[in-house]
Each structure stands twice: as C-alpha cells, then as structure tokens.
Image 1 (tube, one colour):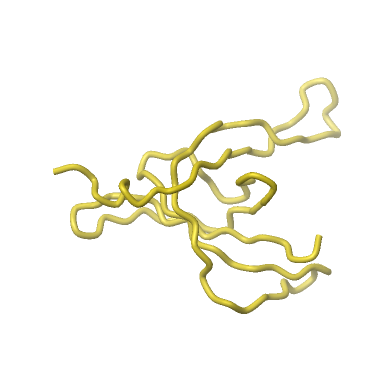
Image 2 (cartoon, helix red, strand yellow):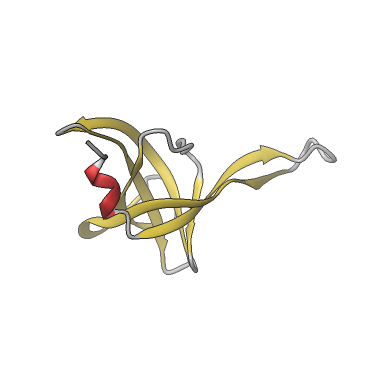
Length: 110
C-alpha cells in the first residue's frame, strides 16, 4: 500500500543548513541541502510566542514530510517569501504511514 500521507503534501520548500565558510573560518552561511521538498505546513496554534532571551516573537507551525527527508534541527525552511527555523524533528509511523513531523518557528514582524 502506498504511503497515503504523501498525498496530502501540497507544497514544496527549500531546506538550507548552516555550514562553515571554507574561505573564512570566522563566517558561516546557509547551504542548500534540499532544493524541493514536498510537504504540508499547518499552524500549531493561533497564539504568538516569545522566546526567553530573544527580542523576537514567533509563530509555531508543523510540517509533515517523508520519513527519509533530510531535515534537522536548526535548518532553515524557505517557502516562497516565508522563512522558518526547525526546532524539532520526530519520526512517526501512524496507520502504516511513516513520515517526519517537524516543528518550525517563524519570526513575526521581521
């Protein structure tokens, strides 16, 4: 049986990962890891959250994608003009549908 959850993936995103700049050891930048990852993104809750120690407000989302997707905490997810930071990654297998459930945060008002 095909993985039915994949039929719900209605958008594609780009995944970038922080990587050192080989030319300058004092610099880091984001490198493209996955250029087109099929997924589904949905808000976790309507509230906006503050992160202790940071002067920013965030909105939380969930991203569903394939179980073998190369997504890790601290990756940058780009969907059009929207940018999210990965704060959690879980592997699930519900009803014979293996997938990753990814928590992402979007800065509000930036």
